[in-house]
Image 1 (cartoon, rainbow, N blue to C red):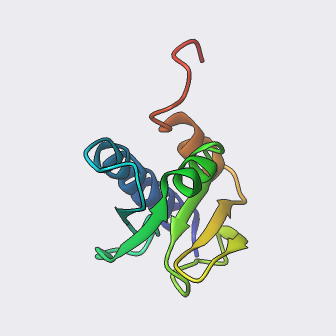
Image 2 (tube, rainbow, N blue to C red):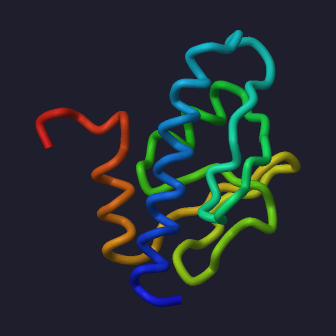
Length: 111
């Protein structure tokens, strides 16, 4: 995968993360919450379910994304956790890591 393709994947993941931040606020915090798969695949609109605690654990690191098993892209990320409902991937390269850090909606404003 070329550099432009890797950057596109990072931007796709960042876009789904931003959408999911809005979805989280609109759901009942008890039980499973529904989110879009945050993978970098073009056209993916699959849904995954996480508890609020699981979602917050993923969001604690700007380089991590919750996706469906099998949606990982090994050229730009590695699987760091697996559950029966989703997996967590982490960005591994530059400038992709910089893109997801810079676009993190929870990023402190002083950076």
